[in-house]
Image (tube, rainbow over all chains, first blue to last red; front, side, top):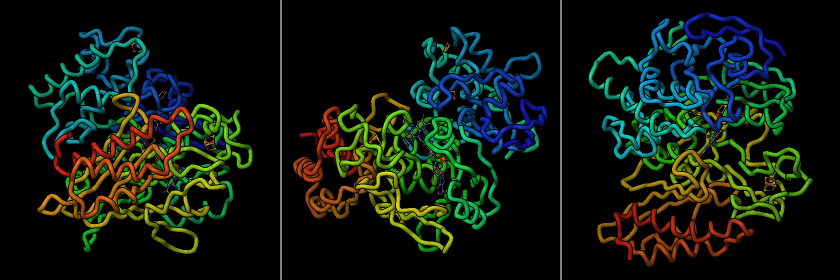
Length: 187
Length: 331
Ligand SMILES: Cc1cc2nc3c(=O)[nH]c(=O)nc-3n(C[C@H](O)[C@H](O)[C@H](O)COP(=O)(O)OP(=O)(O)OC[C@H]3O[C@@H](n4cnc5c(N)ncnc54)[C@H](O)[C@@H]3O)c2cc1C
Ligand code: SF4
Ligand code: FES
Ligand code: FES
C-alpha cells in the first residue's frame, strides 16, 4: 500500500512515495540513493544501518519509513559541513578506525549519538553512580558502542578515535560532536 | 511480507477502536520487535496502528507517591529518568542491561513488555512451533534447548520471556494499566504474562485490542535493589539468567522485606515467592541465601542443553542477595 511521505535527509527535504512495508534504511538507500547507512543484518543486530533520527541514534532497518513522515534523519553522509568532515570522521581517519569501512558510517553516527547521550547525562550499564556527570572512560565507550559490530575488528582504533573527540570536546566549549537536527521537524 | 495498511492513532481511544475493530490489526510502537517479525513472516497484520506519538510518554509521580510510566516512554529515557535512577535503581539497571543504545532509543515501555520470545524455532517459520502456529508441535523439545526454560514450562512450549525490564518490574510489584474497548483495568505485572500451559500462543492476559497505556510503580521504600544479568557476552545479548531483587533490612541484620524475580528461566518474569518466604524475617546470611535459592529451584527441570541454568540461577540469586543486603562476606 503506497503512502506519500516527506523526510528531511541530511538537511534536505525529500518527498517520496513508499510502500508501507519499506524500512527507513531501504527508503534511504534504494529510493533516495543515500547509501552511507549500510545493510548488514537487517535485524537490529549489527548497527551498520545506524542513523540519527530526530538527533538520536537508531537502527534504521527496524524503523518503518511511513511511521517517520516529517522526521529529520542525519546519516554519516550529512554529518560534516559541505566538504569538511565531521570531527568524528576526522578522528576515525587519524586513528585508522576502520579496515573495510563497511561498519564505519554506522559507527560514526552511533558515536556522535552516543556523545550527545553522555553529555545529557544518560547512564549506561557500566556507569557507577546516579547523578554524577558521565566520564567517557574506555569501558564506557565500549559499552555504549556495543550495538555496533565490526567484522574487521577495528575496535581498538574506534575507541581511540572516539576518545580523541571526547578529549577535544572537553577542551573546547563548542560541542562540535553533536549537531542538532538540521530540519524543521526536530523534537 | 504481506501488504498492510498503516495509520497513526489520534488518541488512545482511537488506537483501541482501530485495533479492536479489525481482527488482524496490531499496535506499532518502536517497531524494534514487530518490524523484525514482519520481515520474518511471524506477524502478518492487515493493519498497523502506530501509537508511538500518542501522549503516553511521560514519567510522573502521583500524589500518593506511586510513579506512572507512560507506555510510549523510550527505554533509554526511562533508564535515565531521575526518579527511576534515584528510587528504582533496579529498573534503570535492567533497562540498561537490555539491547543496545540504538535499540533503547526506539524501544518503548509497552513494546518491551509485549516483545515475544527469542526462541530460534519461533523465529524460523520453516519449523513447527506451537506458539507461532498452535497445534504444529514444539521444535525445541528434543532440539537445541540451551536458551530455554527451567521453570513453569509445559509439553506445549518451553520458551522464555526475553525482557529484562519486566523482571525488574515484577520485583517492584508494578501494575500494568490497560485500556480496552470496554474500559480500563489494572493488572499486576506478576499476572500479566502467562505460563504456556496448552495455549503458548498467548503470551499475556491481554485481549485483542487492549492497549497498555502505562505501568505503575508502588511508592519507593527504604530498600536496596539490584539487577544482575548473566549472558554469553559482556553486553548486547539476551539473558541466560537474570535476577532482580528489592530488599529492606532491620537494624539487627535480619531481612524485613524482600521481593525477587528471575529472568531467562520461564515463559514469564518469574517471581521467586518460595525464596522470598524463606528470607522474610531471616538473618541475611550466606546459608539462608543458598537455602532460599535452592527452595525456589526445587521444581526446576532441565531439558538437556540448559542444565547449566539451574546452578547459574542459584548462584546468581545468592550473589544478588549478598549485594543488596550489604555485602555479607562470601563464606
Ligand atoms: C538485536 C536486539 C537485541 C535485543 N536485546 C534485548 C535485551 O537484551 N533485553 C531486552 O529486554 N530486550 C532486548 N531486545 C528487545 C527490545 O527491547 C524490544 O524489541 C523492544 O523493547 C520492543 O519495544 P518496541 O516499542 O520497539 O515494540 P514494537 O516492536 O513496536 O512492538 C512489540 C509488540 O508489542 C505490541 N505493543 C507495543 N506497544 C503496545 C502497547 N502499548 N499496548 C499493547 N501492545 C503493544 C506490538 O503490537 C507488538 O506486538 C532486543 C532487540 C533486538 C532487535
Ligand atoms: S519452545 Fe515455544 S516458542 Fe519455541 S518452538 Fe517450542 S512452542 Fe515454539
Ligand atoms: S542492518 Fe540494521 S542493525 Fe544490522
Ligand atoms: S571496518 Fe570492516 S566491518 Fe568494521
